[in-house]
Amino acid sequence: QVQLVESGGGLVQPGGSLRLSCVVSGSIFSIGDMGWYRQAPGKERELVATITSGGSTHYEDSMRGRFTISRANARNTMYLQMNSLKSEDTAVYYCNAFIMTMTTISKMYWGQGTQVTVSS
Image 1 (spheres, rainbow, N blue to C red):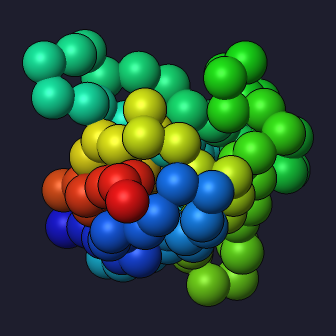
Image 2: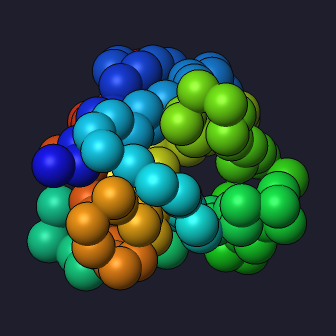
């Protein structure tokens, strides 16, 4: 059984920063590409950033330069450092990962999400 657990969300003022974490646990053989997505009220879930197992990154244009995705493979953890936050960054942030377990081929898993609210 595989679990992805996000943490680090909360309420922050415009211009502030937050660091999200996503910890993967379970009977893991390997973790491939990972990513952060977000969903604002009334909107579809959208990509924020992705990172490969080798550390190559991709950002959506509106987040590039403000957000930094990283991962610590030895700790099965991914991070999202968010700076210069704006009200439009308010959303539930989800992590996902392609994971191969001891008994299954690689497939995508999602976390339960963490709320980020940017407001004065």
